[in-house]
Amino acid sequence: MNDYIELRIDSTPSSEEINDLVAAFLADIGYESFVPDDKGLTAFVKSDIFDNEQVSEILNSFPIETSFSCSHRLIEGQDWNEEWEKNYFKPIVIGDRCVVHSTFHTDVPAAEYDIIIDPKMAFGTGHHSTTNLMVSYLLDMDLNGFRIIDVGTGTAILAILAAKRGAADVVGIEIDPGAWENAVENVKLNNVVAEMLCGDASRLGSLEPADMVIANINRNIITSDIDKYSKALKQGGTMLLSGFYSEDVEIIRNSAEPYNLRVEEIREDNNWVAVKLVKI
Image 1: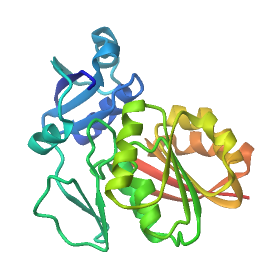
Image 2 (image 1 turned 90 degrees about the vertical axis):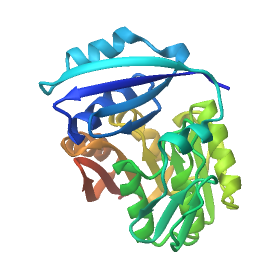
Image 3 (image 1 turned 180 degrees about the vertical axis):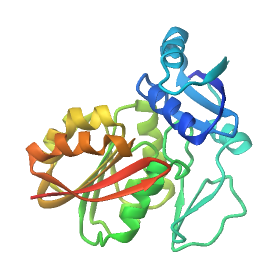
């Protein structure tokens, strides 16, 4: 099992906007999971890439005037399901139609779509605004018979929901080997058919074009790889992108237009956005 560093950051003042910004900056340097609260947030990164100086640089150059206090501790490889059960992951209902819970939960609300996620250290339980927004898109669209590719699948929550909603062919791509293993396990837990590939966007070149490409990652990765996403998408196909803020929409739009991708709809939650694009 992997050893992780649990980084605790308390902020004064503390707000959801500050937590979201801190999480976004930490995600850019490899942090995988975030648990915000009213005093700050807890973040997790593999111990072999933890760099306290990088954290200090992020907080010292923070764009909002904020006072931070930090601490960290080593968490040796363990049963992450137990860790999440004790401290973090609670069942959540999204859009009154989809409930996300883990195998260890007993008091689970009934919903049209029931998704089991044992998250370990992979991102994506439905608690974060970006995952919630992407789930809302998938719930509102007719996916019957679709071929869907989910880039940066994390826990595979979006791929699983797509399969449950009638997609005929679902492929997830995850760069982190541990998260990829977790995605494979979660697909099996939900008794759906979805192929999980370990790798980055370069894997798209070997796949047949899809009716829909999903990427809930972050702005820099999306803008870097959007040409590959477009090549993997059929003419007239739909692309769902999230993992960035409302002020980043124009950057996404400008990156997408050269590849014949037109922004059709934008959804927002707590300044996080998800964008629906169509390949014209």
